[in-house]
Image 1 (cartoon, helix red, strand yellow):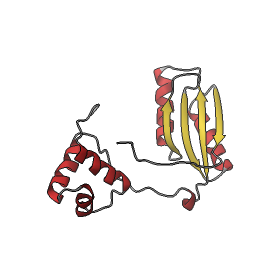
Image 2 (cartoon, rainbow, N blue to C red):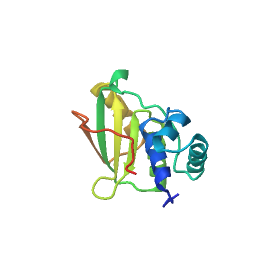
Image 3 (cartoon, rainbow, N blue to C red):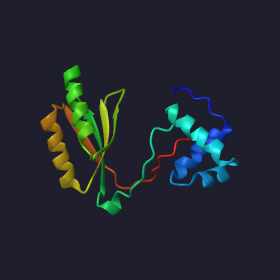
Image 4 (tube, rainbow, N blue to C red):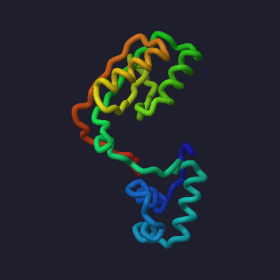
Length: 154
């Protein structure tokens, strides 16, 4: 849904779900000033419309030993569909890659990669360049995460 027609109640429901999707329908209804059945119907409508794509749990990467976050800037000299398909397959199948974006400008792609340490990043990098030929890779180590959220501005 490119331009959803969301009313204020839809937006309040979405905000409540973004904050904590594990809340009961009763809790959400109380927060948004409605009752349970209309809230459930709206959530179902938002799922059907593709506004809500899934519910999941957010985990603490550092508590799981994934202390290194790298932003990987990739320049490629190849833009053939076959290369792109190999690259996408490689990136999408690697659990270390949390995000991947194709960019406009001098950099072709940026990856957000979470690993235990620099050695684990090197193993990721070696596997990536075995899968696809890459012209230039720059890895930037995040020294400190200043802000992290999955909540979209509503």
